[in-house]
Amino acid sequence: MHSGLGDLGRFSDPSLLILSSLAGGAKHGYAMIEDIHALSGVRLGPGTLYGALARLEERGLIAPLATEDRRRPYRLTAAGAVALREQLTMIESLARTGLQRLAAI
Amino acid sequence: MRLLLRLYPIAWRARYGDEFAALLEARPMTPRIVLDVMTGALDARFLALRAFGRGQRMINKLRASQIAVFCAYICFVVAGMGFQKMTEYDDFVAARRHTLVGVTFDAVVVGAVISLLAVLAGGAPLALAALRYAWDHRRRDIALLLATPVIALAVLLGYGAFLLRIVNGGQAQFVTPTTGPTSREKILFVVLLAGFGLAAVASTWAVSSAIRRAEIKPSLFRFARVPALVAALVMLAVSAATLLWGLGLRAADPGLVAGNDGVLASNTTLSWLGIVAVMLGASVVALVAAARGLRLRDGDTSSETTYPALA
Image (cartoon, rainbow over all chains, first blue to last red; front, side):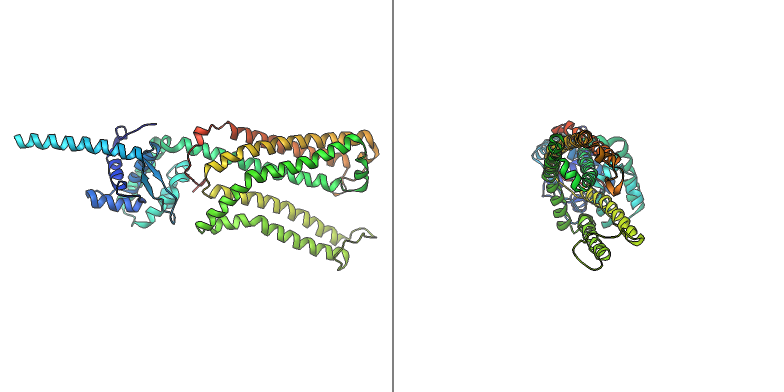
């Protein structure tokens, strides 16, 4: 089984957004789209969302819960929380370095 | 929207179809969303299938093997009912005093009970889980499918009672006829048999469909593998016992076997061979299906996520 978000190709960005959204609690697809839009200004399409969800689920980073009126919520797993933390730490480090370099210009 | 969903592979729809359709219904369909869904379908078909496909396919195979065992068992039961009907006549009862005939007949009865218990042990939790799913999710279609055997039985019993009254001239107790059956009675009886066959096929299909449509924990299917194998092995043993019963009867009372005391007053030997053939065929199908279910490794079906077989 793969782990982390490194090999998700064009789904790595939506995956990061999804994991960030689920870090705030379990959500179904529509709630995720709205939450991600509020978080980042990005509105994921249904096809993109489920392409990423399938990969995240296969990697054990998220887990489905019981359906509620045809809508299935997903939750962040422990492995998902680790992967998200790693990814956000890397982004934070990249942002810090980039800002430092910009300040030197 | 259905056309868009059909772009996705069956295995994908089996896993995500329902929730994906709910998501599409919740948002206005714009050209951008249509394009996104079409791109997602291409991705699911060519790239993402492997991301979820294996585990789900294994669970689908496991479910299919259990359903195949169940269908084979119903065929076996129908043949067994023919055997029971044939052997209830006094001459066949008397023939049980011969050792081989008596022992094999008892083996058939014991085997029938064991196979029934095995099928109930594996199948009842699945049927109850499907019923619970139908109740929790207000799925009338699944509830109706599960109710089909009960409805079919009620209709058959009602028709049987009606037939009894027609044949006996209004008496509830069966009266031995002094004359042969009339043409109308023959037609009514043939309708009863056809109705029985139809009820068996419809009930089997309905229960199988309900199991396919409901979200049932894979652990219940994994548990059912052993009872399914036990049922299949016992079915095979009962088939062999039925074959030996006929051979024993041929040796003990050749005149009885040569008569026309078979199912629907047909030739006894042909009835017996027909019953054995159906029993053996059903047993082999059940055994192959049960073995396929057992060959699936636990790791392939270890997900506890519950999915329907098809969206």
